[in-house]
Image (cartoon, rainbow, N blue to C red; front, top):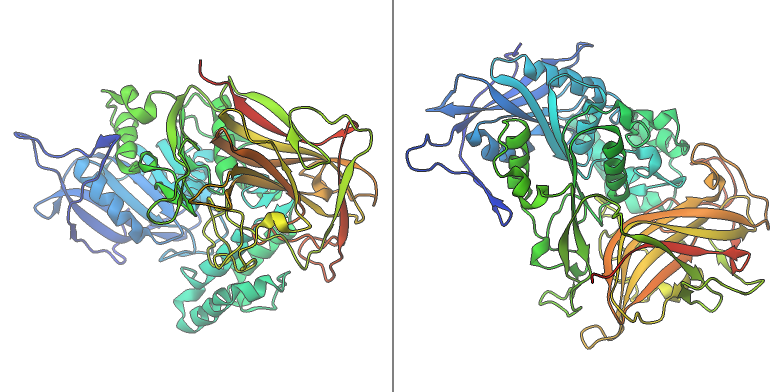
Amino acid sequence: MLSPLGFRTMVVPLMFATSAWGAGASAACGQEPPYEVIVQKNVMVSLRDGVQLATDVYRPARNGAAVEGRFPVVLSRTPYGKAGMASTAKHFVPRGYVVVGQDTRGRGDSEGIWHWMTDDRQDGYDAIEWIAAQDWSDGKIGMMGCSYVGATQHLAAMAQPPHLTTIIPADPSINHGIGGVIYGGAFRLRVWNWHLAQAATGSRQARDAGMKSVLQQQADDRRHYLQNLPLRRGTTPLKIASEYEDMLLRMLEHRRNDDFWRCNNIIEYANEHKDLPVLLIGGWYDLFSSSTTETYRALKQAVRGPVHLLIGPWIHGTPGRSNGQVDFGPDAVVDLTPIRQAWYDRWLKGNEAGFGAQAPFRTPVRMFVMGTGDGHQTEDGKLYHGGYWRDAGDYPLPEARPTKYYLHGDGSLDTAAPAQQACSTAYDFDPRNPVPTIGGCTCCARQIMTDGAWNQWGGEHTWTWPRPIPLSARNDVLVFMTPPLEQDTEIIGPIHVQLWASSSAVDTDFTAKLIDVYPAKPDFPAGFDLIMGDGIIRARYRESDKAEKMMTPGQVYEFRIKLDPCCNVFKKGHRIRVDISSSNFPRFDVNPNTGEPPNDHRRTITATNTIYHDAAHPSHIALPLVPAAK
């Protein structure tokens, strides 16, 4: 039942949203005007263990009073402050929905101890069934939200609450043992950054001004802490936010994809997911681009759904026309609000009229194919890369042909396999001088790295490589490149690199990066090396992501590196480039090459790593080529 704790009401002004893909509804002549919005704040919802979660309920109203009757409900469960649902309510409540925002356990105004999503299955179940029992709910409940708030949707669905009807996860933070946090055995340091930031904002400890100040100071000094990793228990101010320190360190120490990550593993346990309509929204430059597309594939096999995928040229949570140093054109801009409304109208209200004819829903997949622009410099100094929207019956495209491009000893990249009997290239990997991160599929950590579409040159935007020098100039970066392409080459789908390599160390890393190389033009005299995606493998996890196995120095091993998926036209005259190295900092933690336990090393050593590219060791990248349209 509703608790009087913190209860108050207020009327919220109306706001409508429009889009090129559909317009928000408004009152027509002779129809009832849209509802007003009234909100009940900080309703304390009791969970099965007695913990109470602070919840805001936005209801349809007229003349300042809630309207009697039952309505479908849109729910978000968030660690970032439920007040953010006010703008969502301004759109949906006037159109006949109840909107509910809830602070997750231990965050915002909610009781309890935060535990990084491990409580969100049962907490989501309890919240949904509480909503279903209210006299303003018709029992049909949809969920929405991005990132962590996308994860709380999937986690609730894994608990199978009877009244959860549909979900729209955007860039969901899931599959943490399969790339979300641990990527090929390496650790995504944006998660390290997240813990420092969130301990200082929104934690129960940050409700105390003194504690908040100390935690914020550590977050402000994050670059200095990064240069002194590993982070150890009880040695920094993070110790006063004990649950944040404990969870972060347990993650840093636990690189195997096993039961530790079980609660968040949708890909390998999709059969546990409730069978319901799912609209997945993602971005090619989002850190969860692999996770989102792989979740789509897993759910398509496990549930009847329907399951849809909408994915644009976007960074995390930002469906705009540009990111980094690149402009994708006006067609890349999408207002997601009317899309969500059409989805909820269909699955929560049963309104089928015209649903399947709308642009995002004509086919299960709608994706933005990047790269059809002319490469001119825009007025704000960006590279015009362009692109177009493509509807598809599935992802990956059934017509895409996996094509091997082989690494050759002369630095070329070619579909012809190497014929030499012995050929290799060696380089030194010094953990004290790692290859810097410049863009790519990262997120939410701009204090320590850039994200999105960037030229692979240093500059003031990159604190770890502040001079305007290309990464290709480094001796620890091996560059393999095609000749200028003779025709446009469209690549859509998952990417991987197969390497044969050895090391002087018992453990090391290997990285791979895919780059669209623009030729020199008047606007960009040195060309432009546009990152499309990258990946990493920690050698001890080369055979399995569930078990470690050290190397014998000097012995040749086979490595498979999963890269971020690609959806790009490499235009005629451009080159396809693959960079091989052993670090990408601070996107990933740096391997000390010593074989010591994760997050517990005291030493670093320089490793001599050797890449083989001959007839017996045909190292290559596998690219899903889409046949040219006839």
